[in-house]
Image (cartoon, rainbow, N blue to C red; front, side, top):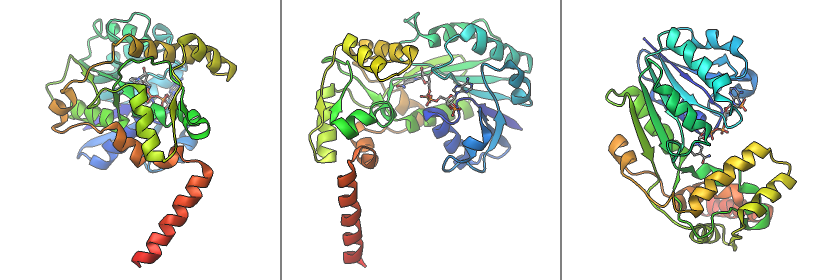
Length: 308
Ligand SMILES: NC(=O)c1ccc[n+]([C@@H]2O[C@H](COP(=O)([O-])OP(=O)(O)OC[C@H]3O[C@@H](n4cnc5c(N)ncnc54)[C@H](OP(=O)(O)O)[C@@H]3O)[C@@H](O)[C@H]2O)c1
């Protein structure tokens, strides 16, 4: 019997991983979503019937119960939990004591070289632990564009990201989830670290073009400087830590560090990752303006009547 615990299970990657594991319905495998608020989690579409346990990184009294009988962990560190020696390492120490036999840790591209990232310190900590681990370092999530940057695109027709003219590659969190499940459920990935990328690199002018074509209105790339970006986000009352983390990521884009793709996703899963244009097409409703949404609904209704 295997028991898999997923932290950050209501977030971008955790939710996609939870849904994928549930849909696979592996025999003899119990999946548990570690969440801060079980009632709130149950209201999320598609996961109402999952197993939940109450868990908070900054509440060590929740660790023992969450780890009961757990054999494998998908460890997603929330961005807010940056003091890893206080909250992540003690959790890992408990996992080691209770005999967890494999952890898949979601880090981020470049974390192995960048000491500032909390994921860097967590990656290094695994070297001291007696638990086999697999580190996945995804590139930027496509879903950032439908969450963090959605408002700017939907209401102001702009991509307001300090990426300069740097080339970037985006990966869909559903592909990250597939990579997680593959390395978790198949042997041979223990004590390995993989960078996983999307299928293509492009600059933000090209990305703005993809949005303009799909949304049938002009979306401009504003190319703000890092300082302007940080200032704007702070004026918008975003948390300093969050703004600095984002700024670091886009600094890596500007300096060309995200200008590459690799075949790791294909080698692990046997097929190619999703393209950004397909993601924008699939989720286009997210960025439509209200009047466009009305039009698209009435167009759908007319097409439906035509085909009836
Ligand atoms: N964004 C990117 O482009 C990118 C790319 C590569 C790697 N990453 C890495 O991915 C990780 C973030 O993953 P994500 O984007 O899936 O996260 P996310 O969407 O921000 O979700 C964070 C999750 O953590 C939970 N959470 C927050 N505080 C918690 C606490 N104190 N204790 C327990 N759970 C808590 C949240 O639960 P609630 O529902 O209760 O809030 C939520 O489920 C980071 O480590 C980041 O470095 C990000």
